Length: 291
Image 1: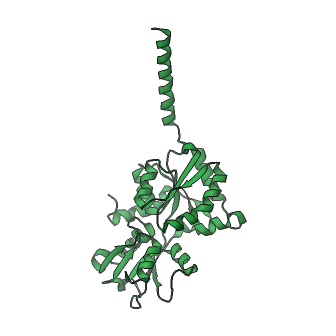
Image 2: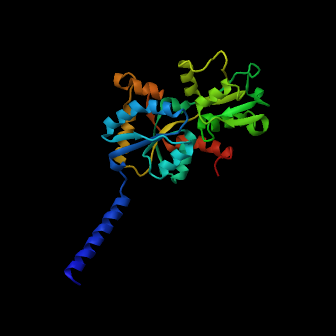
Image 3: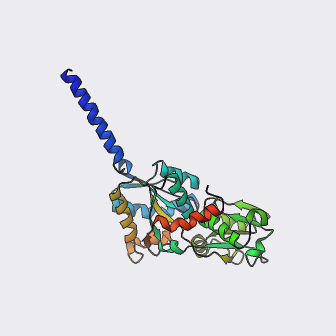
C-alpha cells in the first residue's frame, strides 16, 4: 500500500471516529443560538411581548443569542422539540406529556412557576341561568385548543367526574384555539359558556379586557400541575444547568427581574420533574386522547 493510500485510510478512520464522537456527545445549541418556542395559548403578539425581556435575560445568563420562534399550533411545538428545531419550550402539562411520548422520554421539564404546582381553570358564562356545571346541559360550550391542558383536557376530566359528557350533554362544543379567544367567544355570544386557565382570566380582568358585569366565573376546577419549561433531551447538560439556574434565580423583588416575573405571572420558579405530570397523562388516557 502506498503512503498516500495509507494516509487516506487514516484520515477516513479519524473522520469516522470524529463523527461517531459528535453523535454520542450532548448537542450544543446550534450556531450559538438558543431557539425557544411556546404553545400558542394566547395571541402571537402577546406571546412575543411576554417573552422579550426573558429572552434578553437568558442571553445574559447563557452567553447565547436567544431567538423566539412562534408556531401555528400546539402540535408544532412538540414536533419542533422532537426534531431539534428548538432547544427550549414553554409547554402545558398535556403538551409536555405529548413531547415526552414523541421524544421517547428524552424531553426534560426543568422548571415551573410555583403557581403551576396548583393550577386551576375557570368556567365562564354570560348567561344568568348558568350557576353551576349541571346547568351546562343543552348549552353551547367553548374549550380552548384541543391539546390545551387548562383549556381543554383537565376541564373535560373534571366535567366527566361531575357526570357530564361534553359531546353528549352539550348542545354544541367548539374549540376557540386560545384562552383569550374563549373569553371573546363567550362575550360575543358564540358560546353560552366556556373554560380557560385562571392566570389568563385574571390577567384579562386586571387589564380590563373583559367586562365582568357581563362575563363571570361560575365554577373553578380543583388544582393540578400544569405549565413548565422543557428542554430537548440531548442538549448539553452544562447549558441545561445554566438555564435551570437562570430561572431559579429570578426574583420579583429584584428590580431587574420585576418585569420578567410580572409578564410571566410568576411569584418564583421552582424545579419540576417528569413525575409531576403523571396525573395529566392518566387524565389524557381516561379522555381517550392518548393511546
